[in-house]
Length: 119
Image 1 (tube, helix red, strand yellow):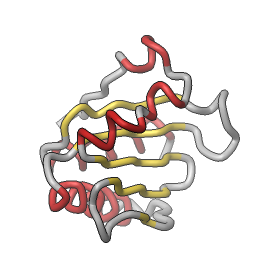
Image 2 (cartoon, rainbow, N blue to C red; image 1 turned 120 degrees about the horizontal axis):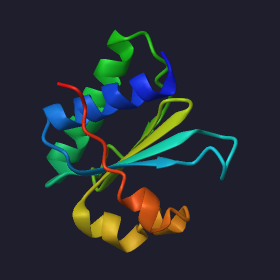
Image 3 (cartoon, rainbow, N blue to C red; image 1 turned 90 degrees about the horizontal axis):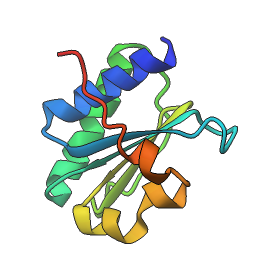
């Protein structure tokens, strides 16, 4: 699966569970570890875990690599390793505190790139 189709599948999985403020950052020029970073917010610890779980299920259904998941115990910030894509699902306060968009040098252009799936 190419990277754009993978991103659409991830965003679609997040939208199914009503994720908020889905942002995709192109990190390919910043690191060789992964090409994209997807950041989304959930309204509760339960929802962040459900969002991460739905992404994991949808990627496995497509026979895509699903690596480690971190943070499911607390649900404040759940990280999924999908190989060339890293997914962060966070509570709004945690997201505002860590501000990954700014940390990764996204600036205004990348912050404005909110992706919608095709469904």
